[in-house]
Length: 432
Image (cartoon, rainbow, N blue to C red; front, side, top):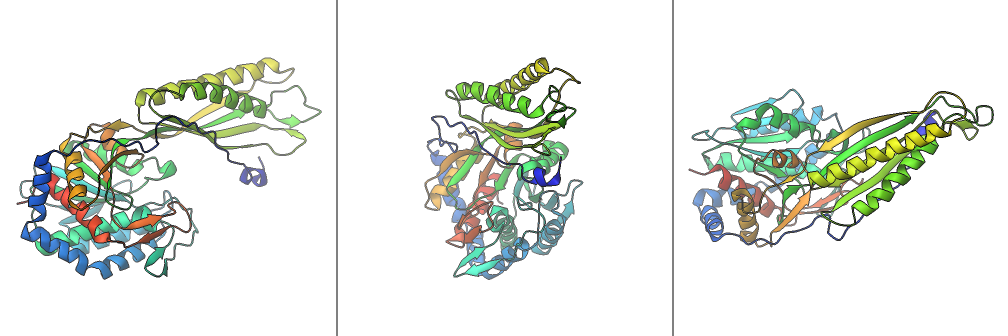
């Protein structure tokens, strides 16, 4: 396939919408014991001292955000940012800091008993490719740069919480790991978090992912996804001279039609499930039968059963298209197909009555927000799917244009986001 035509491969979305919102919310009351617990925790003198430290550190927190944002971290190339973040965590006072085999940065702060381990994490990578200009530009009080909010602000929030704990000399009962993970975005496929739980999962009792702005949203349901690259292959040839051989484009078109026709019916009821034929490509010239035709497909649901159900429809459609195209050939070898899974994000749910979720709701309420329980695709998917109490919460402030070159973040009461992370972590880890 020519590079010219490969680069011109176009995208189109065939996304199914159901009657439920993508970020479907639940309304669950906060148990009074957790409301009382958070109020008592927030009124402790040492915790109040940390709150003041957050305000005092705002100039440094801003500079940390600029410094880290301006270190490129494209998919699978997070090393430079990881190295700097590790140095920052060490300087902030962590007991030990190391980088694991896959590139995650882990900073351990020992607890009094060490009988539990609570992970607080943000992700190092961004969606932006190598060569993207990541220089931060400030307009008024707003910072503009690719990745400034997603998730560099999360990393800086975690770092600042560590600084606050150290200055106030707060001792937790559990060990706390402050982690910068690799591979959260796109084809990274949560590889950092998957590795963390594969190697240390038995030690981790709770996980708090920090991703996004504000402090009202609490993600406790993992939106799972399957992603495939499907390639039909044939001999290729002249459009006139080789007429009658199999045509990969014809098979791809049939596969898309058969899949979307069945998927449309499948997704019109039940738990929201979506599908998108997102990228297609192939062919070399208008007067040539292509030798390959490919597409990339994304399917999502918070229900493992529904996700497997729509996956079966895709596989059946591909095989039907392959069989039909081969039945039409007049000469030459059969068409073949390669079905490669390029993404597998697990799904699941942590019940809203679980203490970690209740504590996060109580903190959000304490800070003056209305807690919103949501579903999303974040690093928390991995522990949620394993039954480990896990949530994703915001780091404060206000942001927008995520995954765009003009992404922005504004320090609009950003200190409340730091309090959010601190209080949820202290409630879960225990405080002496």
